[in-house]
Length: 339
Image 1: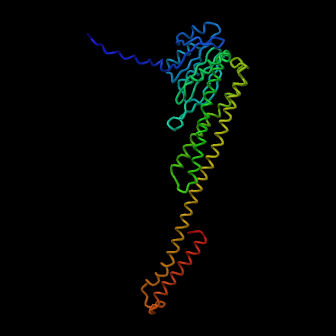
Image 2: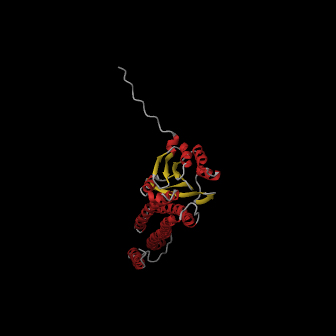
Image 3: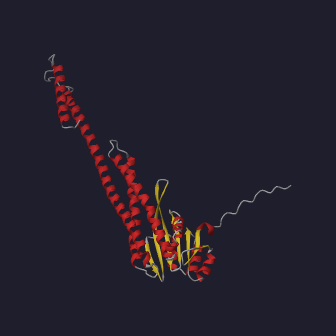
């Protein structure tokens, strides 16, 4: 009997790895099911349907296929492929193109990515680059509320933006807790170079985070006021809620940046103060050593006639004078808190 070794399963194609989900929905918000990219045009040919596509770092060929299916603008496709774009919102005919920065804690470090979103009357396409969590939880939340999903792809856009902003809140809380810990290290008696390094890294991360969050206020403000053909009035309140969350995150980041700048100044002041205290003590001990050195150096000079040189009590007298001078300096410096 011939025993055949099992054939290992074929690795997933590159397109399957880049396409996270491609799902069709009815006008009432109910889910039709998963579809392939080639079937998108067939789904859109039917009335009262729309498609939600999620991509992760797609290549140029895949983006060109989506451009053909949804008639996306060339400039938007170019931006989505290039990545490293600033946060913005642009209008192309009856569709919108959004770029939103994302953040994620990875192994204790703050990593940044971006999401590009194409919104049309009957489609939503999200393209993730870099550090970004999957939007599957946002999609599941939408599917659990079909009455809101019936408002169209704009509700899916709200869910993604709300998901992005909500994921910033734990990062802000973690930064606040780290800053509180750093405050304890700043006021510790021993100076730590690692504390200065952590302060600088945190200031850099907060600056990058603020550059990512602050422009989102303008984007969401536009979504609450403009584009009535894509954003129905029933969703304005939902986008205002996201705006409120973004505003709170931005305010928290600004407050922490101010506290961090103050912490850096306090740390530098404490380091300088500590150095001054050390220099004062060194100067005090140097003064106490300088007095006997000056007195005894006179007797080290090669002179025949020196004060009290021939007297038997001269040496004890000099030692006593040195002791009195040193004790006087010690008492004076101690009262001046130099020792």
